[in-house]
Amino acid sequence: QVQLVESGGGLVQAGGSLRLSCAASGIIGRLDAMGWYRQAPGKQRELVARIITGGSTNYADPVKGRFTISRDNAQNTVYLQMNSLKPEDTAVYYCNGERTLVGGVRLQYWGQGTQVTVSS
Image 1: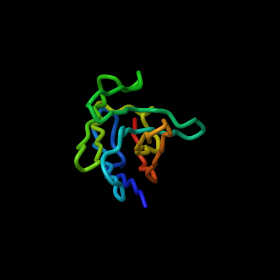
Image 2 (image 1 turned 45 degrees about the vertical axis):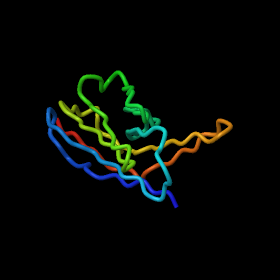
Image 3 (image 1 turned 90 degrees about the horizontal axis):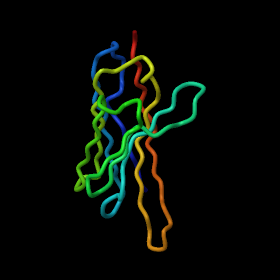
């Protein structure tokens, strides 16, 4: 059974930093992509950052220049370094893993989420 387990959330003051980690288990081989999404109260879940096996990354505009995503391919682990945090970054952050099968079928895996709260 595939599991993604996040850690590193918490409460921080505006301008502070947090580092999220996510480890995937129960997977044979590497995930094709890993990423972070977030969902604030009353809002839809949105992409924060994503990284593919080759190392290419993409970020949501609100976090560009402040957040950095990285991964350990061998361990199927992904990290999100969050700097200069703002109150609007407050949300539940979800780890995501993707695998594309032969034929183009895309499998998605999700963690249980970790709360990030930024106080003003």
